[in-house]
Length: 238
Image (cartoon, rainbow, N blue to C red; front, side):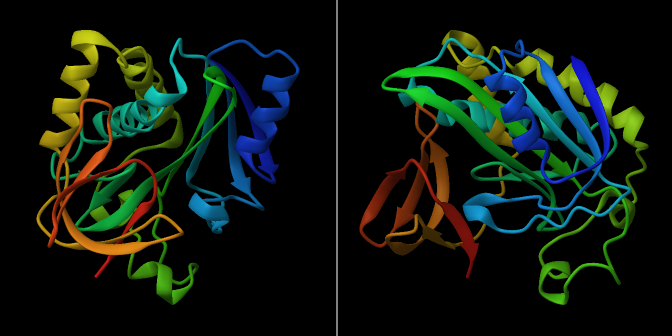
């Protein structure tokens, strides 16, 4: 992984997108100490003070648009694998959060460039909370988020970067064939599927419990009307 290191940036994803448009090769990465405009899903703010890990990695999978949901699962599995070497209790929440004690410890923002059925590139933006959030984050986020320090998982940014590189490299081609089935099964084995959520895709909401992933990586929800696969959206705590 060819890592470009920065102090403070607005967004590692945006910086890497510029590099991708200029022809950067696959496996180019941007690492920052701080983000001033870090983003989560749907444009939400990802608070990014110094001391945590903010990494974006450029991937160029030979994959169709229909298969793209698999990449989100694969990257979240890679992050989970890297972190769980020091805490096996970490769980996964669809589409790509890593949880400790039910709260978000790491989040992933997948963005990319497509045209028709062609995928030009994918950017995996990874944010991992390493140090204690209390006293610095808004109260409403502290109830939902946690950190390696709070969980008693001790990583230096450099140690974790090395581990992440190995794990992402190991998983990044696991989007087809037997490797995809193995990755999907492993993801399901570590998923937090013991509660109901409100599924929200921006246009509709419904209550359901996650129970499975389809062969394409869509989430299967058990609802009052039966099982329903969903491709995009998020799960909100009830």
